[in-house]
Image 1 (cartoon, one colour):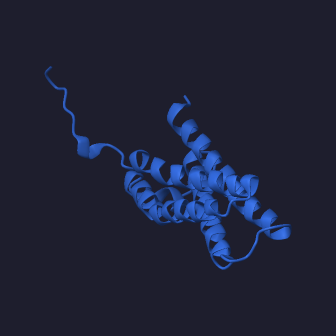
Image 2: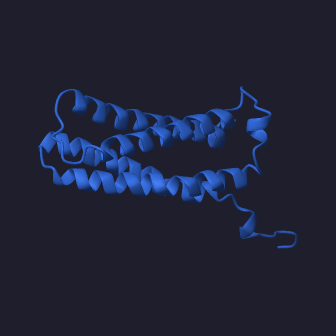
Length: 146
């Protein structure tokens, strides 16, 4: 096979590392829903753990994305009709929403969640999850659209 070369160091990093925090944040949402469905508070600890792992691992994903796109050019010179910019905006919004949810919930560790508090709790986490799903759909558009 003459002329066929493979350099693993030229492969993009972002697609390989993005799935871990997405899974952690999805598990956090599932644990949060289970907390309210079952009424068992041990799901709170699991939800917090998954959420903090997901949020803390997001900077690695963002760094990998900037490496793969060769910097900030897509932000400095935005092309609003291209999905990359929208993917970045929605994905960063998802990460910010989950970070806000974690910080909001951290101050309410010993408080029973009911009524307005429960609505805010589930609402923030669900908004973060839907933003995450939307970012994934846009990513799929970038990869599979013609």
